[in-house]
Image 1 (cartoon, helix red, strand yellow):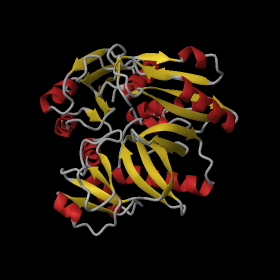
Image 2 (cartoon, helix red, strand yellow):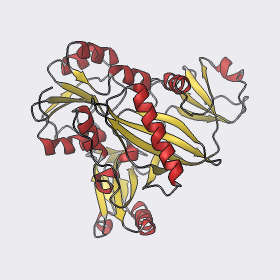
Image 3 (spheres, helix red, strand yellow):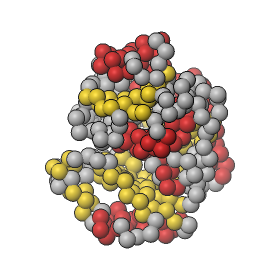
Amino acid sequence: MKTITQTRLGILGGGQLGRMLIQEAINYNINVSVLDPDANAPCKNLCNKFTIGALNDYDTVYNFGKNLDLITIEIEKVNVEALEQLEKEGVAVYPQPRVIRLIQDKGLQKQFFKLNDIPTADFELIQSIEQLQATGFDFPLIQKIRKDGYDGKGVVKLHSRNKLENAFTAPSIIEQCIDFEKEIAVIVSRNERGEIATFPMVEMDFNPEANLVEFLISPSQYPEAIQLQAQQIATQIIIKLNMVGLLAVEMFLTKQGTLLVNELAPRPHNSGHQSIEGNYTSQFAQHLRAIFNLPLGDTKTITHAVMINLLGENDYDGIAQYQGLEKILPLSGVYVHLYGKIFTKPMRKMGHVTIIDEDRTQAIARAKFVQQTLKVIA
């Protein structure tokens, strides 16, 4: 492969993850091209070349990638067949198309977990409402559409066998509801040489309305044995996938102290945003190191970090305004990241804020103040 500064990198997806990846790539003088269907995508003005086009269209993805050296993704919903052809023609694609294909389908993910003895909730693959009604699982249960779900969309809790009006009719998986204590995540990376590095485990709280990460704390204060087990599970998965790149592994910690893998994301992830200020190497720098086959960076935390997502407020739809920004900027250890999205709507991810402090309690308290003060309106 060419040197990092000579390599023409393409990113499928021009959202906030691509934007933050470009912000890191600028430090290495990497030439970046981006493909996205939105003419006003957050990456538009940061990349060297911006192409408007559908990510799931074969010809669009193939033509975008055929003159590049390396392609990566910031969203899984892409045309895998085009990436497979580009890979055959000598374009490096990381994560590999076969990995993207597996992770695009939550049913295949679950079967992969079962085949490789990776702990996960009991599940059943279903094709119809009739199969759902006939399940041996007790209600309530969780139904997840197999393909195209994201950011909490495509997931529904079903409370009764007799009340399935909100159930999905598309192929899906069903799981028993997990009586969990906390949702946690570990991000793991692997380069072509097989070097692996895991970020410390983080704790997550979700917005119950939007089912999006709203509050993240790093590092976790759970016992070391649990944290090591979570890192070992993430490592086992990336090895079994034989994957190059960055992999976010979301898990449930049950009230009995058991870890169960929920879902995977083969790219930078919302559960790693705090690493920009809170770790020696950010998840975005690590992703670049992994796909360029460079030595992986030190993932240790520098200090306590709390990350909150900035979501569009309910009842506001229009050009985004950031109310309360002047009240939080004077605070020590507060880092604001706005994603360059022109329009806001309810529960849309518009940015995030990371708060760092040597005192965990102080970091959490300041994060709560920021959360109450900074609002995205129109």
